Image 1 (cartoon, rainbow, N blue to C red):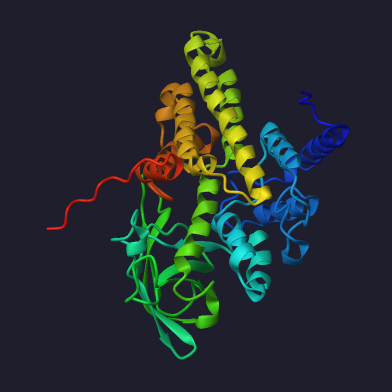
Image 2 (image 1 turned 90 degrees about the vertical axis):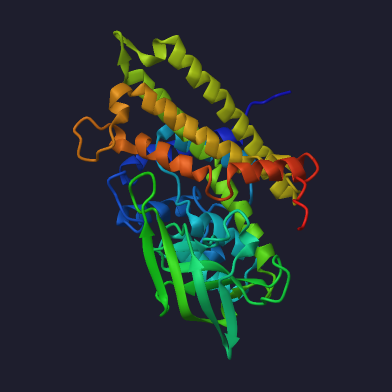
Amino acid sequence: MNLEFSPEYETFRAETAAFLEANRNAAPTPDDHGLKHPRRLAWQKLLIAQGLAARTIPEAYGGYGAAPDILKSRIIAEEFARAGLPRGIANQGVSMLVPTLLELGTEAQKQAYIRPTLHGEMIWCQGYSEPAAGSDLASLTTRAEVDGDDYVINGQKIWTSTARQADMMFCLVRTEPEARKHHGISYLLFSMDTPGIEVRPLVDMTMRANFNEVFFTDVRVPRSQIVGQPGQGWQVANATLTHERGMLGDPNATKARLIAIAELMKTQMLDGRCLMDHPVYRDRLVALQARVYAMQANGLRVMTCQLRGESAGMAGLIIKLQGCELNHELARLAIDAMGEVGLLYDDDSAYLEDFGQWQSRYMYDLGLIIGGGTAQIQKNIIAERGLGLPREPRPAAV
């Protein structure tokens, strides 16, 4: 079996590598704070024009419009990782809502929202979890009642990332309270400037307010802002959750982290030798490297199934669990590699390395093992849907 790339793909790799090297100085840096920082938006626009971001999104909606190609996607990911440069924008709007709208949205919704979202001009947040509806999301109670041409929303969401910065929200609400809990839910889109919305920040383990509570009091949303049909929001929500798990378990982002840690270990010294020359540290890196490569292979399997219109089955179910746990272990190795400096958690410290990104990732990635569906719930899904094991017995009714 010949596993070498054909001349076509080798040419594409060379062109991609040359473009990244020539435009290296245009890439945003960790100092470029803000979701709409001009350098971030300019970088995204440049990548889309080159076909290195939003590659298969139709041109009519602001994408590049290329046909899906697994090998080119793999080459793009490898060259970004090798160059150590940030890829295109990956967030709740680009990575989760856009593919949902492409599949289930109306033409008017696609025209209105996909282009500005892809270009980073429209930031979205996700209104899913509630204080009493997290892992059991279908128990949500935020309600939306019909009043003429509008829905009137009352209730609360929690753990809402980027709610303070967001322009828009995609939100699950209960429109038919008499229906069974997985029914009667609808999926709405609306502006965060709508009267009646209050956002309160929540500080997490990173000591930053990455999450928020959102309260709705008589928030009026046009009924045309629904995705799918009334009462069928659970199906739409699951499409979005599938894309969310893929984003959280992105093997290409994990590969970039692995390369960054390998470079870090070449510069960190212990007993007069760099860490890469110490067997204990090198063995840890190699073990993680094997898992990253396995994760990449699994990602190609999932992509192949998507292009064929087939279910990825078990391969798709393990992505989020595998990715989040592996990212956390990579961050732990980076912190260990920095020695006592890895214990610092102070943006003003002169000794802080890599802008303190590994310390922040270590804490944030621990939270992501819970976010998007806890690891425990995900293991149940893998066991029941993937392996066909029996469901856990429910307590007998009293």
